[in-house]
Length: 328
Image 1 (tube, rainbow, N blue to C red):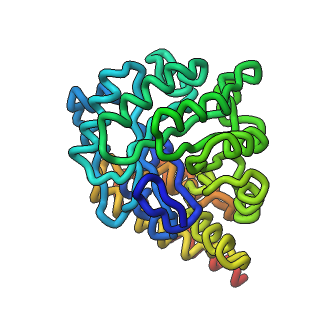
Image 2 (tube, rainbow, N blue to C red; image 1 turned 45 degrees about the vertical axis):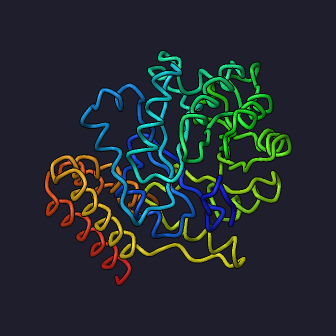
C-alpha cells in the first residue's frame, strides 16, 4: 500500500491512462482484476470547457472504480486550471493527473503533452497553478525527455515536486522513441532518488517478474502497466498476486478469456450503445484473442460484426473450435 496525497492505494500495480482505451468499461474490468489504481484516458482542457458532448461522456466514472485518476491535458495555464477545477468539483475522481508525456503531433502542436518536457520552468508554473486551484491530489505523467539529447527527467521531477504535486508517473522512453526501443529504467531510478513524492515506473513491464524487477532495481513505489493489459486484465491480477506472494499464477484458458471479453463488450454497450460499442470492441476482441493459436479467421470475422449477437457468436464459435482441436 502507498498513498497519493490522502488517497490510499491498496497495492503497487497501476493501470496506465491509454487514449481511446481507458473508458469506464475497460477500467472497471481491470479494477476487478485487482489494480490498485486505474487511470482514465486523457481529456482535452478546452474540449471540457466547451462542454463537448463526447468529452463530457468521458467523465463518467463507475463507483466501483475508485480510487481512480482522471487525466487532463492542455498548453495554456488558464484553460488547464479551469478544466482541473471542473474535474475537482464535478466528478468522483480521486486524483487529477496532468499529461506531460503524450508524444503525438496533434497534442505537441497544442503546446501540450510531451512538449512540456523541454521547459522545467513551465512545468513548475503549470503544475503549481493547478495544485493551488483544486482540493484533490494532483499528479503528473511524463516521459524521460524529448530525445536522447534533451533528457531533463530529474530536473522536471524536482519542479513537479516543488510545485506541490502528490506523485508522478514516469514512462522510461523519450518523446522521440514514441513506443519503440527500450525503456530506460536507470533514469526512472535517478528520478526516484531525486524526489520524496511517490514515483510510479512505466515501460517494458510485460510480465509479473519484470514488475518485481522494476520495483527492486529502481525503488519506485508502484509499477504502471499499459499495453500489456489490453485484452489481458489477467496481467494485472497475476502481477498483484506475484508481488504479494511470489507465486506465478497460470495464464487463463480460452474459455475464461472469451467470458471476460463478452463481459467487457456488455459494459461497453451500457456505456456507449450497441453500435458504437461493437465498433470499438473489435480491437479489444482481437486483443483478447492474441496469442491463441488459429485466431486469424475469428479476428477477420470479428471485424465484420455489427451487433452484439454477431460478435458473441464469433467468439463462442472460436472457443468451440479450440476445444474441438484440443479433443482431436
